[in-house]
Length: 402
Image (cartoon, rainbow, N blue to C red; front, side, top):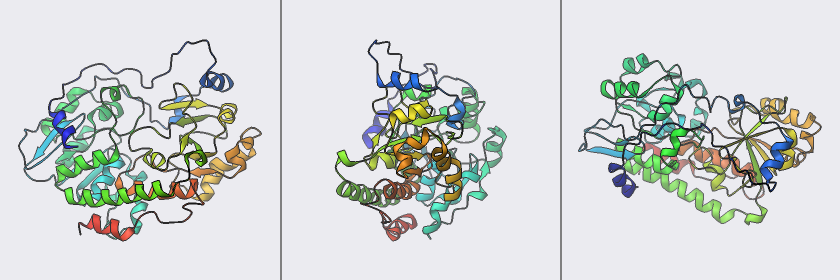
């Protein structure tokens, strides 16, 4: 990470325009591909299935290395695309658009300074119930979903823990808005860690959860907490590696966007093994991705019941539904599959392997819990109800008792 940070200091400011929101494979080869067979049998459906994830208000030029702080502060870190930011004292208050960054802040023991986020009512804070060290209450957060800059001025945080490119994409903002906030409110420090095919993501690679976690920890002066929590992650990854069945026996999964609608037969699939923190648990669990052989399916693919049956995954996981009750999930997703003449023929439906999937927004705490949940679902014989990590060890790490 330190080497990466040094290279970031030399990064150039890229001003290339946004390109298409989602790359599409334009292969015109005459040989029939799996993608072509499936697409011909299914409908390519609208963007509503993505639950708003792909909608952009505008297409401004992507920003790289926007930081306005001078180097040399005692607390300094670097992160693409925002470059290096430094403080004489650790930032006390901060805003994060993404819950993943909120979870990072909570893990580092600075949750009291978390002022605002996007739609705080959806923050998955129930995962904190098993951790006495966490007293975070998402209800106390201000909602920034409107993109009203006045909220940022009124809250006056020390740090904007968010990718300015994502802010321009989500809000009706342009480069002048970003400059204004950096000069009058606080520096931006963030990276959009989810692979959506946004044009600005072509300007930089999507970082892993732990890379981002480390950079934020450096800025807050919480290196010890980072290392203690990273150790818990390493233990989990080692345990998974030791206990997972051979690759040939691992399930092939279809990760369906939460906006998919079994009632109408419209489905949006997300690559289960894409980079970034959104699907970390599935990569760590070594599953096979049903989209692996589907050309042009990065990061999204849309189809109908016939197309889904053509893929016929071993298990179906519905993204963003972990917070639903079992009854709600069954009524909205499982029963419509079972009642549909084609959906009921899916192997995953026949075998009762349609599962609630985790929230896409996960930092180091939420990811541990969501990995444990997914392990029990996808590998019941190996993991079942087993706890993958020691709650006391994680709690001590968050408390700073390291």
